[in-house]
Image (cartoon, rainbow, N blue to C red; front, side, top):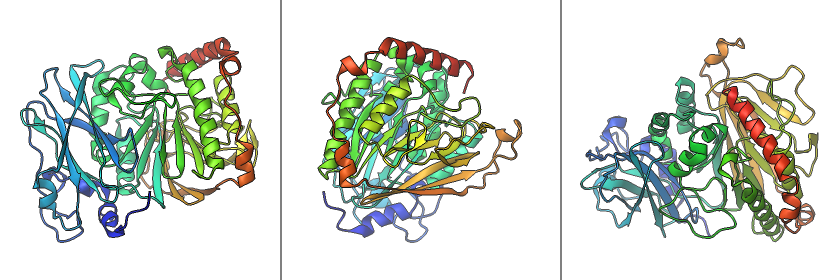
Length: 492
């Protein structure tokens, strides 16, 4: 697919900043989505008894021509709901964007929200103009309408994504969210432990409400973490997010829950999202391991054919770490997983879990390896700030930081350039690490180049079956359950 023919259209909405794209008077009384005069932004929200809330965007199909929107309404009697949407032309004013009749409408599905008296609604827009921003609103005439939001188009050649995990609803997480909103990206990846509800479903509502200004306008794809297991063994995560289907299945049930492991392409990068055993109680780990194997084997073949440049895996759990109390590694399940990552030449492993920032050299099995993967640990979403082991760093480590922050990746043909932005704690004491200075700055930068053709061809191998991958599954399962229980009992 070719890139946008009118770059001004995209520049208009990206340069304006994500916070300025909500067409609602509650976000300030001045500014223009088109970068023009400081005219008042129209109030587009239409309140009602079943007001949409927690609105967030993802995709289940093509990353350029489709958008999936998920939202919630209180109570179990919300009326028929839908998403109305259309393209934004460069000649449209703020008032046009807010008030002009939408070209398209799609019905939303509805399912009971796990653990609370509410409904989760999903609607997917397909066949949208890939060169233009999409404006949309969700709701119903009888229940109420959301504000009008605008999602920029997905670029084709040069683009970016942001990754962090271990977030929450407190002051530091909200500070981190505000920083991310200042820094536009085309994709947002959340590496698990999102709300820290730990079974209290009202906290999920708070988290989604706090994240709505960001996630309603930025495509967000998430992985579950160990704290998501506390929410009905991950059922809350499945219910509240909308993701692509599992790699080995086709289609998606619009009335059913989202998936916890899935894959998608964004231009010439293939992404695989896994649970790394975080939701082992749901019984899907054997299926997931087989999905990981087959998906990465297919991706390695496509890369050797020149169809993609990079393979990226996102999950919550680290494989190697220097966080105090967790060093040097997480054994059993992740050792099997690391074998798969190395077998098929994964380029980047984006993780969270440990509340520090740490980037590896290209590595494998704890040693630098030019044919290995780069692990980028960004568990610095703000839930807490932790420290490193006194015995670290290990030989594979290339950069470390203690504080709150996020990593932004700039993708261009044959190259991924990473920049980590972080703010340190007030001091390194246990009490001082409960707060941050809020002084975000560039703390690390790195580049990952596409593999040579020979290196790509070395990773083209047949996918292995359950006789090999699941030969020691009982031991792996038992250890993973013990790991998850131990971690959750320490509330970290």
